[in-house]
Length: 131
Image 1 (tube, rainbow, N blue to C red):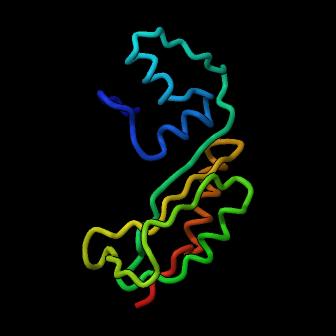
Image 2 (cartoon, rainbow, N blue to C red):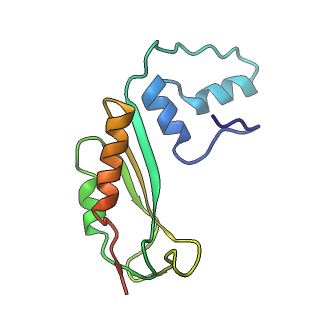
């Protein structure tokens, strides 16, 4: 649970909308305007979501984004956003804080299935790094 004086960033909005049907932007605007905020919340989530930023496994140059672009067509993939351009120098853990290569967000029938799907995608080396 993240508690802030602001709405969480990144995938927080999309996660709440997909899982619970609650639009945090809309609810924030209602609160700012003094309109009571009482969104209907289902007893069970609509789906499970898993997301991550994929780190560069080693230092080098980011390769083609073709595999990343192709994965967006798969069922269960909400998005696969590149965070680097081909040819840019990236840092792996052997040289410091790894560069984020891409942002992945997927859905599944359960949290375990969504996480397993996300981990499978990570293993596919969607943004190859060339030394």
